[in-house]
Amino acid sequence: MSSTKTKPLKSLRSASEVIEYLKRSGGAGVTEVANELSLPKSTAHVYLTSLEEIGYAVNRDGTYHIGMRFLDIGENARSEQLIYQVGREEVDRLAEETGELASMMIPEHGRGVYLYRKRGAQAMPMKSHIGKHVDLHCRASGKAILSKLPTDRVDEIIDETGLVAHTERTITDRDELVRELETVSRQGYAVNDGEVRKGLRCIGAPVTRDGEVVGALSVSGPVGRIHDERFEEEIPEMVKNAANIVEITVSYS
Image 1: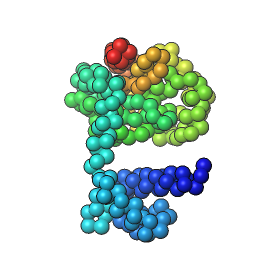
Image 2: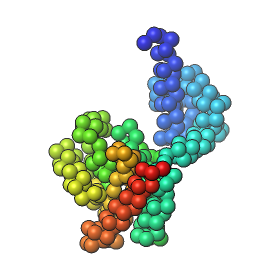
Image 3: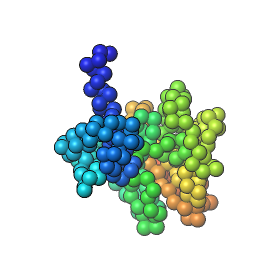
Image 4: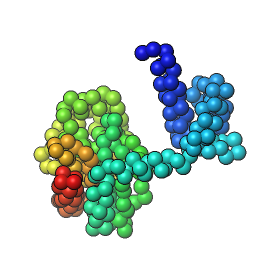
C-alpha cells in the first residue's frame, strides 16, 4: 500500500480510537485524550475539534463528549436490519407473556449486538444497552447464533475473542463449548445459566434466512422466577416459537 493510502487509513483509525475513548470515559479533555492514546497534544486537539465540527463530538466547558449524531446513525443502522423490522412484535409479545426481559441480537464481527430489547412487567434492569457488542460464548442468544455457524467460523471467533470468564459458570474450554453448541443445535435453543451474571438465566433461539443465521431472540430473568418446568420447557418453547415466526417472516420478506 502506498504512503498516500496509508496516511488516511491511519488517521481514520486514530479518529476512531478517540471516539471509542470518549465513549468509554464518558467525556475527556484534550490532555487526557493525548495521554491515554499516546498522541501529541496538538494532534489530539485537531481530532477533537474536527469531530466537533462535523457533529460527532460536543465540547462542554473543555470536556469533549460523544455527539448525538451517533444516535441518528445508530437508529438508521438498526432500521435497515430486516430482522428488526419484522421481529419487534415477537420480542414485545415475549416480554408481555413472560413478564421478563426479551431481546433481539444479531452477529457482527464475531460478537453479538443487541438490536432491540423489551422489558416485561417483572423484568430486571438492563445491563447491556442497545448497540452494545458482547461476547457470544456465554450468552443464550450468542450460543444460539454460534450453533448455526460453520465450525471453521466458530473456531475463528474463539481465536479472535477468546473465551472470557464472566462468572465461575462461564464456559472457558473450547471442547466444552463445542459440545454445548452440538446440544443447542439438537434441541433448537440455548441456555445461559449464570454465565454472565450470577443468578440470571436466559433462553435463546436462532433465526435463520436461507440457511444463514441472521440473529436470535431470547428471554432472561432471575433464577428465582425462571426454574423447573418454566426453565426447561415453557420458556424454551415460547422463545423457539417466536424465533420460528420471525424466521418465516424474514424468509418471505
